[in-house]
Image (cartoon, rainbow, N blue to C red; front, top):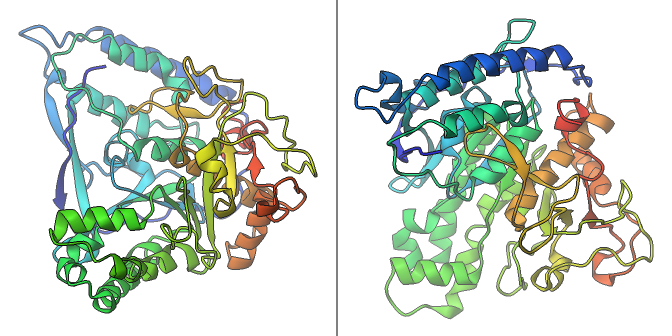
Amino acid sequence: MLLSLLGISTVLISCGGEDNASPTNSAPGDHVQHKQAVAEFVRTELAMLENLDCHASNSSSACDTVIVDFATEARPARESRSEQVILIIDDQGLEFPAVSRYRSRVLQAVRLNNTTGLYEHYSPQVVMPRFVRDLFTHIDTFAGSDNQPTFIPAVWLRQLSQGVSNINSDFSDIYAVNHGDMPFLYLLEHNPEARFVIAQTPTFFTAFKAEFCAADSSALRAKIATAAAMFKDNVLDQYGVRYVSYSGGFSLATLRNRWTSLCQTLIPEASLPALLDALRPFYEVLFNTEGVMGFQASGINMSIEEYPLDTDVHFHNRVRVGDYTNLDSQLPEDGVIGHREPPALIASRQNSRRWIDLLINFGIEPVRPWQPNQTALAETNILGLDSYPITSIQPSWATPVALSQAIYIKNIQYPDDPLTDAVIIAIKDQLTPMGCTFYPEDEGRCKVQDPLLHRQQELFRLNYID
């Protein structure tokens, strides 16, 4: 599929949509009629696509490129769960799914203003053919039997993906899937009742370059603390965020790279730990805020010295997520296997396992052709029109699976309870129960899990996919 999608962004202060929240836990549904209606919708859309020839000199205006703006593309909000608002933070991606296919699911987009050092709302823009924009609008506003916008899994739209690909297009730049798109699309697809806030990874060292390059950790920490407090008020609290997905982290190597690019003087090695710790107020907001459960992709080859914040055990609402892959893990639903050796990890994960809270199975061969098992981790294409087994492993791809498992546990075990710190602790205990003793560094926790084998995701619980 050939598309030209440009990352154009403009700052815009705007308000989030109203929360059309369901007050009770949704029960698994029978989607036979819904799926039949979607199949008819797909046939209609395919017929329209078959009549398009975007290569012809007199091609339809549907082939023209259009700028699609987050603010002006607002669509009716579908029914959602007020306690299923997810903040996803990444330095690449996020914008295209948020503006286009899944616009009704996204409450707000925020990023750090490098002049003020504060997060603010902005309105991402992307460029695409008009027919693609129209197709996304039709999908995102598709109404169920109650005439309300309803969720459509990407796998139900597979024929449309092929239909779009078949159009002979002159759009020569192929949009590349960026780092943040994969976890964002996973969360969108596997949590049908969730809504989202997207945020770019903070660039505090750039915003506070003077303090950073002066190696003034106290002044830097004070400014980051102010920004973090505003972030809590204007993002977490304002939009009712209950879960955080963060596919990133900071190490001393990160600081060395920032210093080289920003300061262009000799790196002050002795000052780096204090400068890194200046980020602690932001970590406190992400991972110690009452009633907010944070999931962070783990690092690899970690040590306390190089990754002091990402190895710190005092962020009590955080789950650090790692990855492994095994075609036949043979793990029970709770992962409890006693003295038995769990599935093996890659060396760069094994040497970091004491600082990883939860390890997620991808269910694929680790080398080409990446043969999947029947319950392998699925990725969704950038158009949101198909899902299929993933062909690589990394902690960032495991993190949304763990977060989705937590929402599944919340809805099964604590459907009517608010997400308090006590409930978060209980969910963490179920994510990694006691009862595994092979590795002393796991401290009895069963960290190695296979939630996809046991279909511990809302997409499956709600019977959209078997």
